[in-house]
Image (cartoon, rainbow, N blue to C red):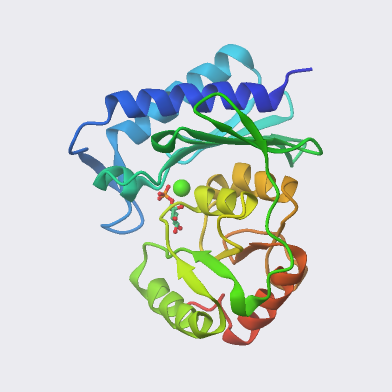
Length: 267
Ligand code: IPD
Ligand code: CA
């Protein structure tokens, strides 16, 4: 059987290396998507093309879902979920918080994931039931464990905001109510890195509305394998409605803070 985590890791490493080498000092926006600030660069596309080519070479019958290229059908029951650059706005501005994210789903369940934070020389990976690790500069492997026993009032909480102005207005109201209840807020600009940061104990929790499957597929497994709970409101799965991630006790506290704020509303 294919070692999916190893293959995802190799491909994410190659794509991240390519992006580091090829990133021009001022990347050009080639397309906008859901809003004028939701951008695509030529290298988002080049990264996805490279990843798709490598997957096809190794596993020609697999399905692929990619942020830029959409759905490619396949017959094997295996689907790759690809975000060629998560944190595209950071990539555009030359900030080091962007990552290549690749997840592998078998019969609808994520079984492996790799998130390559190439500018930092950090690659996070996990396999279902096998734990989560951080490879630094391609060398040492550190087993990841999220922080536990942190009360909400002392929690460092990462979050993010969508590209749509109306949604951001609501997200601003929600974060204004969360801020006085926690240690502080972080907005790094990459959902995948935020979830890996929970896994590594660099933040205590994360929540966000409006993320896409490719943003959280790989990093959600990494966080889960590091001991965190990843889910939505009222026992629902993580997804675009709302995703919360933290160790169990903090997950519950943050969940209960968010519920009366109605974070899934659109206005
Ligand atoms: C975005 C990032 C960001 C999150 C947005 C995502 P992109 O993905 O993950 O942190 O707040 O919701 O859309 O556009 O950089 O691939
Ligand atoms: Ca993304």
